[in-house]
Image (cartoon, rainbow over all chains, first blue to last red):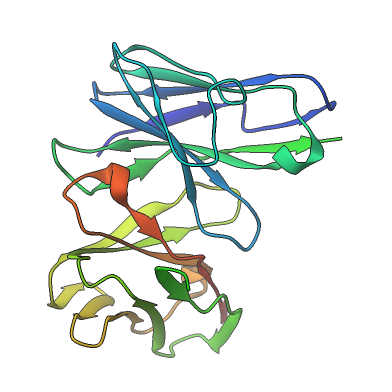
Length: 115
Length: 112
């Protein structure tokens, strides 16, 4: 399985600012994913990040609000832009393990509080 | 109606008890079924993975899939306090991790 390191583990931010979350994997992976986990709710996929192409966003999520970079096969960043208290959540990086696999592995998450 | 329904709990049982966690789903195309365990302030970790119907056993954990009833279960035998966590069911119709649908999770507490 992959080892996924996510930074920061938590942060408290002022509304209107932006936060960039980093995700580092110890192996090369094709697909990386960014999820949001709100209290009492299921994991919601924000976008899929493939190296060398634009990220694919799910319904309800837009690039201006959640820009994503994927410069290589082991690293990705998610930025939460112009934050409001509604963006307070846990953000999780995930990777698909193996090609055409439903096995997904997760980082430890970033707990974001916007005040 | 959500595609995947899971009772949020919390569920509290004494140490040594058999725990039964369940999910129902509405999409008959789902054929990949997973259970994740998530400890507090950690990311989810893959616990069990099943393709199509049937049972799968791994140590104290057994996963069951009943596609005719659109119902999946996770059983934990001889439960331990270290099993206290949130358990998320997950499923997909496609062989791609980009199409996984997660339940909202059941919070489980094992009392010593």
